[in-house]
Image (tube, rainbow, N blue to C red; front, side):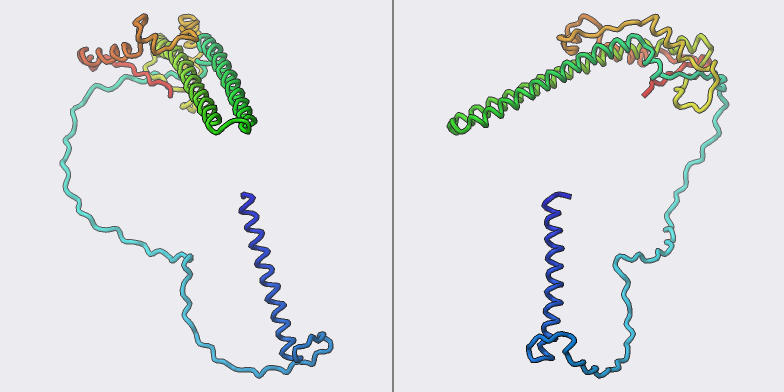
Length: 300
């Protein structure tokens, strides 16, 4: 509750109290004046008032209207009768080859990422860059506040044109700083995406290989499985292979924009990867139905 609203509530309550008190005082004064010629007489000296004649009134029954807020009992509604056009009959489908027996494995992708040395390295380096950027932003903000306070102190000795000019320069400085810090934050985030993309691509390949080595054709996330036996969990084995194959990842330098690096043509890009993934689906012939194809669902 704000202070102004609370003050209004208190004033309203005080006003209501004063109105009630004044009404009571007015009623007592009028009663005293009507029975004692306008003089105030203590209650002990007042003569007893004559009892008023009792008037007998016949009560007239009145119909009570239901309150607006009172809910009326809802009557069950009969569903409407709608047309039901006929639908075509579907014939039985011919028998197909039954899918292979499921050999299930489970994996915890978050655990693999925590055990990954490449992910730990990327997190450490990029975390230091984020901390450095945050410290620089705090220094810039403190400097901007100092300049603003200095302008307020010097405003008495400056003309209105000079004050407006310094305010405009100060606002331009703030806008430039915001654009610079936003761009630097984007570079850090895109560098994190570059490093994470390497781990994800390698992890997809390793999960397929580890699952194939164990004869598994269905791998599920362990976070979605209520019960499994230890022999079905390939988390530790996958993490060990990931650290062996990919102990480090490429992280763009601090002063390098990942988007500029992608346009330089020095290394493959995500656009090349997308095109490579789309080409086999469009040009490769359909595989035989007798050869099952593994499906790896990425962890969300």
